[in-house]
Length: 264
Image (cartoon, rainbow, N blue to C red; front, side):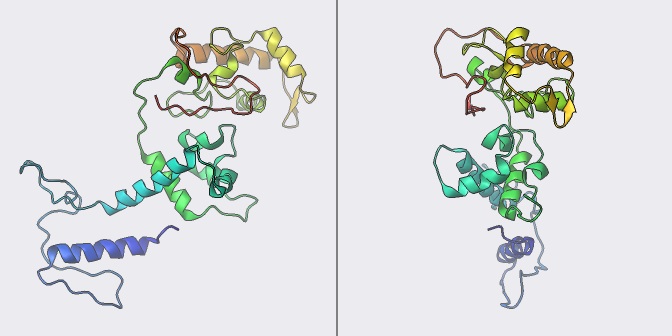
């Protein structure tokens, strides 16, 4: 449950009362306590921990940051391998895209992932706040193996721009389970892309093609977008040769698991 904003403000006001007043007093009927005493350290510098007198601060807990950290920690629990009912409930919001649960780490906007289902079922505020707190973090990609690069989402990636193809063609590729870089390869080592002929055979298995979203797709333009997409993956995401060591590889096209979360 997410605590209301007035609660956080009242808590911080009481902390400042204890910190700055010589004789702190609290009134049971009030939410928070006003302090008129002189603050010899500004609020934004108070959380700084003094180190040998080099920094001005008292090591006061940054309450707002602490709350956000606790909320983000629950999202990390949501991503771990454990199985819980509450995760399946959250999937109704966070796992609606082709990325599954990894969507919370993507560039998909929080308002898209947290919008109400069917207009009347809202996501609890705690999880909306947690997702916003997660998106405030500057996730930095320090190193990436080839397997990690092959696991990267082609679309909605926070580290790489998507291929420049029309949105409807992108949605069509997503519907065909082309979601991560490895889905563009015909082998698990990531050395050979599917050919145009192989793609045509794969597309022909869908009885609705060339119609998508109630509109007809130009098949030649659609297949040409594949070349643009694979060129983008080769030059932007998977830019180095395959490793000789055998490591777990991401799923190929058509597998149930469409995304592999990597930490390297």
